[in-house]
Length: 80
Image (tube, rainbow, N blue to C red):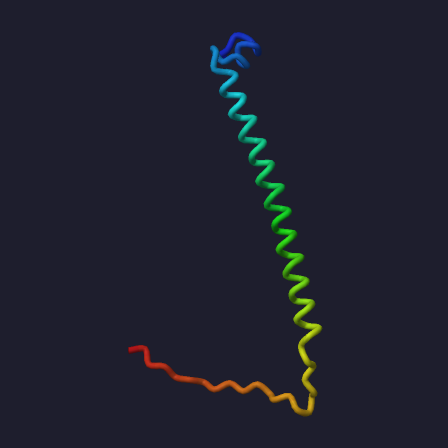
């Protein structure tokens, strides 16, 4: 084992405070990013739902008698 005791492992020959502070900052920032991303995702989804709901309520409903059927025309394109 590289260290004689757990205390020596934590001290890391004087570099322990820097190493453990770096790990702490990393995990705190990762948690903040994860929570922020989750909240932003929920806000975007909610905005999309509201926008889709407002569009569907404003759109006129087509009558089945006057609604035109979709027609598609095949177009041959040269591959040259």
